Length: 73
Image (cartoon, rainbow, N blue to C red; front, side, top):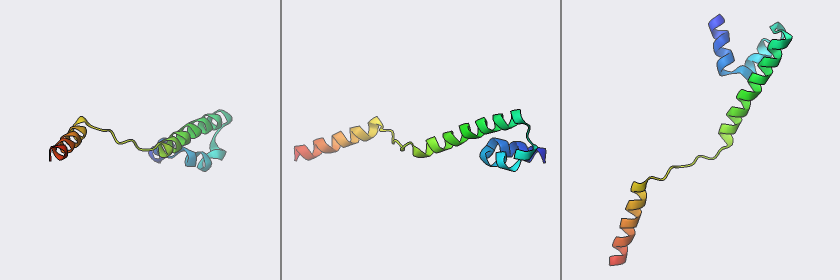
């Protein structure tokens, strides 16, 4: 059971803070809130950042060679 609590605090701290709120002391509540907010901001931040597709040099070389073939015709 202890393993599940530790796993819960690592994976879903913003839910665990509500589950174990009454069992926590004042210091642990403050640390739990700070940790949960940090985790939640990280999750939301990763969801709002647009995905950037890295451009490789191979794809740009292919585009240039295709354009040059079209120009020769």
